[in-house]
Image 1 (cartoon, one colour):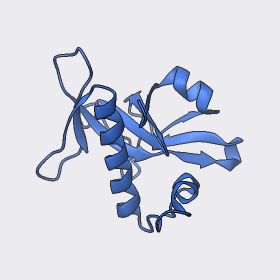
Image 2: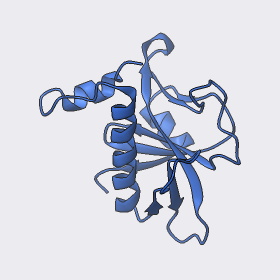
Image 3: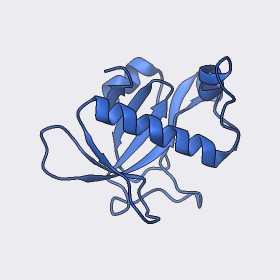
Image 4: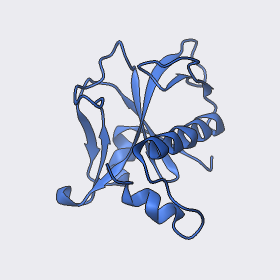
Length: 140
C-alpha cells in the first residue's frame, strides 16, 4: 500500500516521507498519541503485540478504551472524501472486543471514531468529519 497523499504533502519539503505501510502506521500512532495527550487524554501502549494499538482514557472518564489507529485516506473516487479503514489486514472489521474506538490520523488532525465493526468509516469532507467524529488537533 502506498503512502497516503496527505503524508506526502505534509513532509515532502521537510524530511523523507514514510515509504512502507509499517512506517506510515507508526507515524500515525505517534501523531495520535501527541494529539490525544495535548487534548487531555491518558494514553498507554501495549508492551506485547495486541489487537489494539493504544489504550486511551478520555478526560473526565474512569475507564480505558482500546484504540486501533489508522491513517486517513483522501479518496478522489469519492469526491475527496476522508476514509478511515476499520478493517484488519485480513479485510475483516475490528470487533468491539478488539477495539472500542478507531482513531483516524489526517496530517494535523486526529479523529476518534466509535467502533461499529465496519470495514470503512468515511465523511465527505473535514467539516462533516468533525461533526460525525470527535476531532482533536495536534495543536490544542
